[in-house]
Image (cartoon, rainbow, N blue to C red; front, side, top):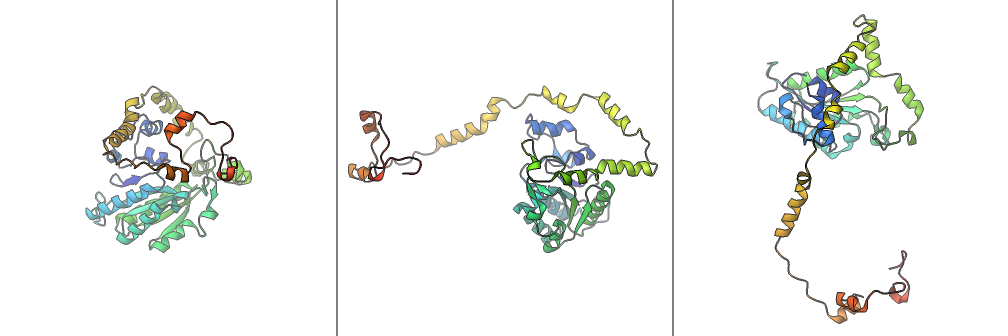
Length: 320
């Protein structure tokens, strides 16, 4: 990516954030709730993590249409021509926001790359139930090209994404890139993937570990030695404390700040004009609806015995 390109991430693009020079503390601060996205997205052209599934696709398309109208697309100037990349997962591809983004991008030929990380599981829902065709083929229905790439092949994914971004900068419109991969772990800490998928599938995909494959490729071609991956690890351990330790002492939002939205709602509710009181009902109408005035309850005291429904039957879970 070029400096002028813009990234619209989900909440998992840690590797992309690292490549854009984002401090991990800025990402973890948002997850811990010690800030509210205080980082300036325009500083690195990397948007704030988006928790609402698929919403960032609409944001990305809108931004792409904006730079298109600014004349920053298809000029032939590598320092000016820009593109947008919007990340999402296979589950998000079923969201309305994503499909609306596809429609607008196709209609206006927006310079955007839709990068779908297809890990084949939307929580416990397999990709076969989400789509009857490979996801990249959906792009044809919207009028722009789609391509599937081995998401566990680092170099292939890089080459395909680079070409799609250049195509967008040249003014040739959107592209859908489906990076076909596999979710090795659980969806969340409360998820148990052994309930809905086979361990044989996990073992099969372990052999396709993208980090190990890249290491083997580089070593086979004499580009690294056996100790190259140990040196950065040692440097990282001695350079600075782990990011999590740096956040342990960070103060979270104060109680007054956490309660501010609730207090604001209560204040607005108190300012509402009083509504007209409901006219009292007659004793006859109360009898017809089996209602009893509050003052009668106070005079009679608590009622004993089972409550009586229509016809004198006791009112329990199956009655009334």
